[in-house]
Structures are given as structure tokens and as C-alpha cells.
Length: 190
Image 1 (tube, helix red, strand yellow):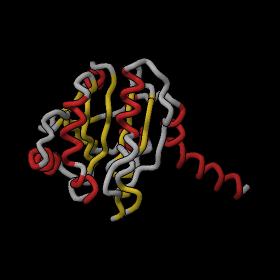
Image 2: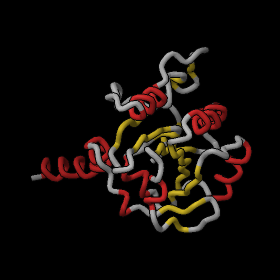
Image 3: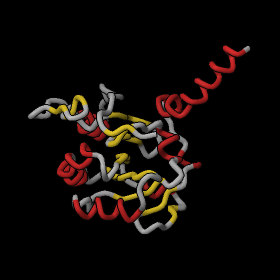
Image 4: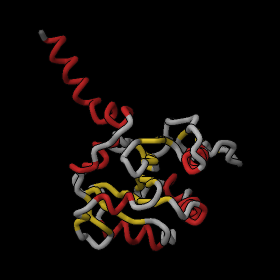
């Protein structure tokens, strides 16, 4: 009996990750606020473009800070995609606004996941961690932005694999996404 209880506990703990890997996420249960602490009452507004990229961020994560230029370039390179910077309950909307101003994230929508509902829905564990989601809430790609970082404090001088860009390009061109998941490298959060 005790083994079953432990097994059930493990399964329930892994449920958000399993749901995120099944393919369709149910955003109807998620409450977010925008950069001005105003509740986003209709999450469909985040999915008005062809697809949405959620990027979990932390203002104190050195890897997030190193990706500042990338966070500026992605929305400019893919204007048909909605980019959403997600800050969790460990940071206030004021900190999120300051981070966005410092790194000029004008092409991204900033949201605050104050109850970590989006984090639990997606199974996000790392900053930065990205999720490419279709307008039908289908999870198309999750993981690292690229292969620049391969460990904490360990990075390549040149990016050789652009996982997120490849997934977006495949989606926009109606082609299959070959790499649907990678392991993100960054600051772990719970």
C-alpha cells in the first residue's frame, strides 16, 4: 500500500510536466496580470497571432541577462509571433518592468504569473525556458532558446543550433517541427 501512495505522489507531482508534453495546454484555468498589475481576463488575447512564445524569465538570472539582445531580436525577426515574457511570483511586476526597460523588451508582452499557474501548467523549471504554442493551445516546442549555454557558466563562443528559431520557422512554413523538446539551461526555480 505504501508503495502505491508513493507512486501516486510521484505521478501527481509530474502531472503538469506530463500535460505539457501531451500536446495541448488548457490556459482557461490560468490567471495572469500584465506589467501594470492589471488582470488579463481573456488569455485568448495572447494568442491572436499565428503562435505565441512564452519565455520564463528571472531578472537576477545571469543567463537571462546574457540573452538580452536575443530577447530584442526575436520579436523583430518574427513579427507574426506573439512573444510573452513571463515573470513568476518570486518577482514583482515592478522588477519585471525594470528588467524590460533595461533590456528594451519593447517587442514582448510582459506578464506576471503571481500564483505560478502558468509555471505549473507548462511544467517550466528553468529561466530562460521557452514554450512555442499554437493559437489552438497546442504545445509545439519547449526547452532552450538555442545551444549557446550547455551548463551553468558554460557557453559556446558561437551558437550552432537555434532550437526556437528552427521550430518557429518550421511552424510558419507548414513543415514538421523536428526537435520538439530540449533541456533548458539556466536558473532552476520551483
